Structures are given as C-alpha cells and as structure tokens.
Image (cartoon, rainbow over all chains, first blue to last red; front, top):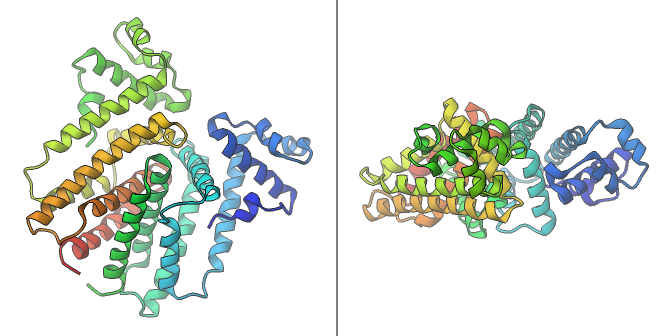
Length: 203
Length: 203
C-alpha cells in the first residue's frame, strides 16, 4: 500500500522530487536529526527552489503526510473490482504480513517516526488522524459492501473498521518497537478466527 | 496498571526519587528536549548524587524502563485470585477504556515517547520488547488457566496473548496519535465478540 512510485520512482514534478528528497532525508537521519539543509542534500534540483518555498523541515514533512493521504485515497478507490471478503483478506494480509521487505520496513519505520510527532504536535496529529480516517473509511466501505451482498453478517461496518484500524496500528507499532515474526503470525491467525466467527456467521 | 506509587507517591529510596524525577522531567520536556540537568531540576535531593551515578538522560530513562518492567511483573503476580474470564475482561477493560484520567493519559503519552525510541535505539528496543513480553506472558497465563479450568475453549494461549498484545498496543498508539473515544469503544466491543466466539465456544 506504500505509494512507492512517489518514494522510489522517477519524480514527475518538482514537488514530487521535493517530497522524495524529504522522505530520503528522513529515512537517513531520523526526525530529530533532520534539517531542511539535509533535505536539500537529497534534492537534485536547485536548492534555492526548496529554501524559497519551505520554511523548515516540519512544513516539508507535513506536506509529505498530505501527499501520502492523497495517494492512499486514490489507491483505495481503485480497489473495488474484487469481492468484499477478498478485499478484506488483502488488507489484513498486507497489514499483518509476517515479514516486510527492506523498502516497506523502512517506510513503516519512517511513517512511525512521523506518527510519533502526533503525540505532542497538533499539526501532525491532524494529518495522522486523517490518514487513519481515510483507512478506516476504506475498510468500512469494504465491510458495508460485504453486508449489502450478504457475504458478511449484519455487523456495524464502522465499528468493525475501527477495530481493524486498532489491530493494524498495533501491528505497525510492534514491528517498529520490539515485535517478532511470531507476533504477526499469531495476530493474523487470530484475526482469521475473528473474521470467521464475526463476519461469516450471525452469532 | 500504571505503577503510580512510583510515579506520584512518596519515594521510599533515593533510587525511587531519581526515577520519579526522571519521569516528571520526561513528562514536562518530552524526550528530545530532555537533559540530565532538567532531570536534576526535578530532583529534590543532592544533584551531585544524580550526576555522580548517571552519565546521561538515556541511562536514567533505560533504568526507568527497567523499574517499570519490575513493577509490572510484581503487579501481575498478585492478580491470580479472580476467575480467568474476569481477569481477561479486566485486562481488556483497562487497555481499551474509552477515556483515561489525566494521570494515566500522561503516563501513556510518556511511555509512548520511550517506546518510540525503540525504533532506532537497540537499548530501548530490548526494554520495550521485555515489557511487551512480560505482558504477553501474563495474558498467556490467564488464558492457560482458563483453558485448564474449561472456562475457555482449547485455544493456543500464546497465540491469543500475542493478539491481545497487538490490539492493546494499537489502542495505545491510537490514543496518542489521533484516536477518538469512539475507536476505543468500537475496539472494546469487537474484542467482546472475539472473546465470545473464540474463547467461550469451540468453533
């Protein structure tokens, strides 16, 4: 789900190139050590362009988060051709994958750093809340489709979506701060039980 | 579950007083702005005592985490007089409470800051992993007791405990970075369904 074209692809616009440099510099230095100069070091075009448009690292990072939200929302819109159950399984398999390749592991660590800023900075809090909300809306839509198609029991789509968000955020946190492959397999297995007995059948 | 006697009580030993000052300074300044001097400012006894024994803020914070692990482990040992189901409900009600009082909210934010360090500092990673492990062992013991007493279905206690840890870590992260009261209520409600259909009955 990582919009990896932005992060690793050939940037189409100057803004994309700036966002890519922001991401690279954040991966390399971490939030605390990041400066707009270090973002400039990753930027291959004129640095004055960068310094002219942005006042500091937070402005760039907040715009990076905005870009991620847009990309996620676009990506979610494309995911409607499969059956609800397959879409839900796809979300859970992605979020609770036992291992991550290096690119995704780095993305998870990096987004985790930005997420951590939300604890004491309202600007980050707003973006992280919107990112969570857009994911939650997406899951709720999948559940709603499944209920409408009688593929799922008559659950409350928003409530199930909230729960899926909590579980996937837990997986995300644990990957970054002490989790093991076993945790993810266990969580995936128990979510399978949950889906089976909560969504497949009326209690 | 916050060992609040350490954090807010009257410290019994000099070490407890140092740990209390460490916690207070971390609450006040956050990790990035924390210095051993600022911890010293919260310490009511001789500051030379503090500077003599500790090289820097990380040494103090890591010891604070160690202390938390010990306290949690002691607390868990005392919780064996109730029935397994009541103990599990207690854990879930605590971890997924809709709202937190100010003291616990501050504790959650502060521990979240220390947890975030685990992403790029192996010393924090080790402690956070141990904290998670001790919680996971505790939940697994509750489930195991329940299975032995035929109060729960024949589930894998470790696997269920891993899942509970993921869910509670997700709740913890979401409280700090953009969650709402509604998220917690939804997660608690869905965990009730999970417990009902996974633990109360054989599938």
